[in-house]
Length: 595
Image (cartoon, rainbow, N blue to C red; front, top):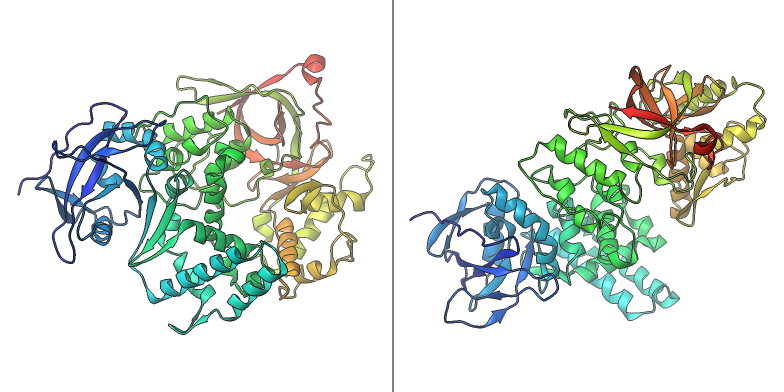
């Protein structure tokens, strides 16, 4: 049979809709494609392909995992062979109705994947395609017994939460009863074990799901013959995270599951009009997610960003990956959190890159999981001066920032040389080495050493009620003589196990992470101390950029030319002390050319 030939789309505001013919069992899959217009203001409907049919039918958008890209299966489209992947073939067999047509949008069929110009044209309108669909169908794949347990558990949690006032004692009591009954007779698995398997479906790892669910009117999760509303999934996950008893019942691997947290991010995206979603933060949040084409790390999340409305997304899959990442970084530098991508660009052994990129451009495929100082809105090292990045070079590959060189690094303690496995003994030795170096600071500094030390350890801040605060002083007596750490926390740091109490355990992990900086420790030539990127060298420069929240570590490669090493916390200059608001008028700016 002749292979199917796509009819070109007439313009950039057009799309195809898949008309899935009725069938069941082993019947061959028959379908047709209808071309229709996209209108972001009106509901997106499609006209059935037959010229004699005037009915306008709503369509559903399919969200699924491509899996193996090999197009090993065939369907009959307008009576001709159309090759598709195994995963889509299985989904279509499950989704077709036995007695009527079904209108769907599925990217692998509705977009000619062999036509790069068409892909470039269609990707920018996918937001409209999903937001105007009657609903989104999330296809996870075939169902296992464990999946059935998880779906039942999530349904019970959602039903229980909906029966009572949120947060009431009646609600908490009912939820605890659900947890007590969480052993399912279908298999020797607890509901939380089954939930971990359910959230391990590869669909939750896709970078595109954030947009596909985030802009949908409503969604339903399909797993084999079973289904679960997206609202129930979302509510259940939120319920688990806000109930201490259920948190205690969870394994640590489930607690830190990226799939668990991506549901929260999608919930925030769905409430996008009440939330701020900077492009740079979105790119960081999807760092563990997967895409068939790495360019999709940018293209999938850009339409969700709330801080780049002035930029028109230009999709081009023929561009080298480096150019796409450079362009994305420029967009970030013009956005709400302009300096955050400079933190993401830090190169070290934990996140090597095989791309040829300027030092100020992150490899968005390999972002490190370090805790970046740019996350904190509390720092203002570059004061409130207006940032004004510009670009030079043939391809605008040189970033020019206005600011100043503050100091040079004179001594460095390497984190990776001291901490190999993050156990208590290594952490203590690392902290003692840092403390000893800190004691070498010039005596002219007027801050008492004990005060200086505890502020350095916690970077002069901490979390309280879910928000970052400055100068939080912790009470208690620590195991090594500090007066600023809770004993249960410091005891864990230096040898004991995690507490069984979820609240104490959460605090222990938070304090441990504060110590596990994944940063080198340094002393500057003018006597300042701080945490700098792994790989910082003696003679590297500590610099400040106009309006930048934190200092930058730059490496001189030739006269007036620098490479970015990463961001830093340098104690005593994080609030604009050495770059006040009137700096420009008093001293003038220095151009920092970063290659």
